[in-house]
Length: 251
Image (spheres, rainbow, N blue to C red):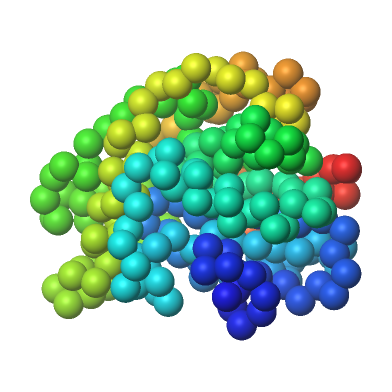
């Protein structure tokens, strides 16, 4: 269920819109949980319902096996979204979630003839420009160091060995998804693409986000906000305001 309301194990519904006209689907970063985006549920107007993906192996899905391949993850998220495709779907993916959002958009179009209203990609290179890295192959200390470098996670908690034992398997699975997702053909999506990035991101440059234009024949723009890889924490109000404007323009 989604946070006590109707849905599937893959999606949490953080808004209580009785009669939405559109849905915003949020796909978290590597190591992320749906609760990271809890505040998004009440950030939009009454026409917008917010659904956030909850990947296996964390929080209420702790006892489920983690998924460590992008294609499997994209297939399952796509299947979970189909019951919600009766309304326009706007996808927002952050970091790993951006690649996942792109893959889900392709599957919705190619397999189910559902074209998203828009695709929002944040802090992640375009599919034909991604450069796989291997932190998932390293030890726990190196993995935690990578999390600290990126920010966005309360890594002080990972100093506790018991918490590490609980959290790191899901983190490692997600980093395996990222590390095995190699450059892919620049297959276009059938909707506008909006790219977001922090101006001091340590692993993604503005020019990397510009390359998303290659898969966006139906419209593209990039927005640079102050901040690092997790600019969306410090820039929450700005991001919510601008996303609201975009959603109002989506069909």
